Length: 222
Image 1 (tube, one colour):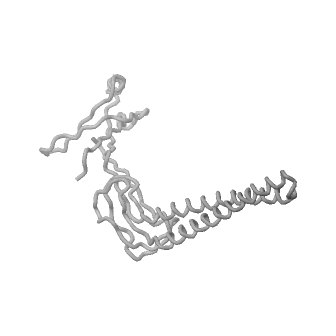
Image 2 (tube, rainbow, N blue to C red):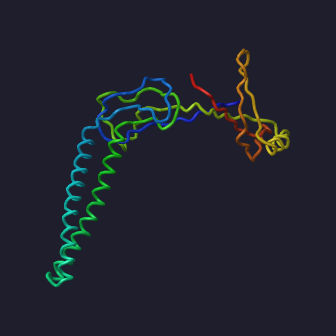
Image 3 (cartoon, rainbow, N blue to C red):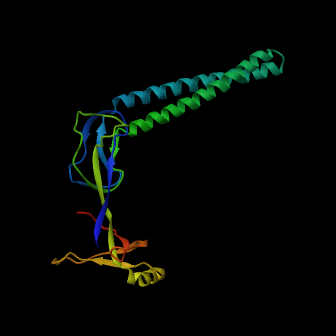
């Protein structure tokens, strides 16, 4: 392998609030979905309770409005109630049905915002330095990351080969995947094995070589 390349991803806050706890140590290997930080969830829990209360209230009002509508519908059909009362009852049902849809959307949003108070690893890899501490205030739209995760699986490496080998490389790729090996000089460790995933379509005129890229999936990270 030539130059090994890793994918770095800056982890940002998903919610505004105060960092309450850091759930990892610097340099720790984390898996996708692991908790990294806990943001103060109390304001978001309160907003969720408020949204759920509004939904429950309007559902009760809708139930009453539906009963009134059914009653006026029956009375209007028998000539015991005016058409206006019937239309008003139907309008009340439609209005409250729309209100409940808005209430449900508010509940869903509050639940989502509450989930964002736990900042989770967006990918598996090794964490860098902790850039915020417990007690710090963070914002969802802040440009300052909380931590940077270095994805080390798979490893992507770039290597160059003489252009004279291009025809053979393409032929081998047409038959299936093309394996590559990389060994560290003066090392007793077994070579790393991977496969070619990219061939550049242009020749480097200065060196007369073709750029290839290969990756190696690691079974486990230590």
